[in-house]
Length: 188
Ligand code: HEM
Ligand code: HEM
Image (cartoon, rainbow, N blue to C red; front, top):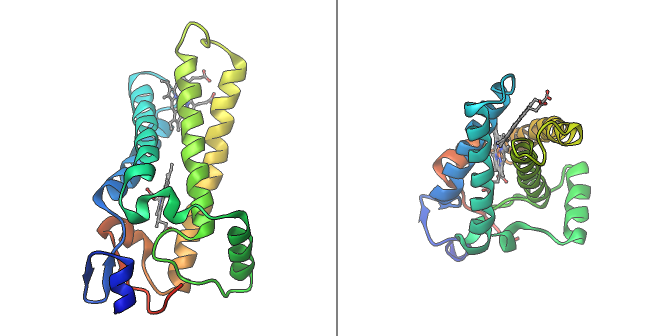
């Protein structure tokens, strides 16, 4: 319990508040904005462009929140050193990885990648609407390829969340809605 109290300011029946409302609203808004932009790709007009800009704005805001936000929202809380990442991946492969309250080192890298990728999609999309970039095949290729790579990454991201949920007998997807997770039972 002492450890629980040390790891978070709010605990409730062995549950710890991990994701603040900003992180949760950010996450599901990003999922929605990305989905709408993707589904409206056919005629890249108003809805496509504004849902894309919404995704871009969400990413920019999340980067800021990663610097000034609550404990587990901060990059300093979850971005791992390379050695830590390698060690974690090795443990996953042997089925012996620890459970984390915040993002685990592999999830952290995926998160950085997704933020960067959505940022690239948004910026390349915006450039396609400018006099400078309009009609550029290179920009169209960048936009489209970044979307396709991101779709693969999202698939991995979702499967990893489900896999880790089974491994540690918790529902990580639900935590992204409620903000709560089971407290750690020992110090990591
Ligand atoms: C329905 C599909 C999705 C599910 C079920 C899902 C689930 C999750 C879960 C469980 C986490 C927390 C991971 C952890 O505990 O370490 C997370 C984090 C995250 N996911 Fe997703 N995700 C989905 C789609 C997406 C999409 C489409 C994107 C980006 C385009 C995305 C970007 C992120 C980011 C950036 C975070 C970090 C959240 C933060 O710290 O602010 N996710 N996701
Ligand atoms: C995360 C957000 C976004 C996603 C998932 C997305 C996705 C896509 C996809 C799948 C295409 C079709 C590519 C092709 O088949 O050539 C497309 C085309 C396009 N998008 Fe986006 N987009 C996003 C953001 C934006 C933004 C912010 C803008 C501009 C403000 C934009 C402008 C365009 C334009 C002008 C095209 C047509 C390019 C062409 O003719 O190939 N997109 N987008």
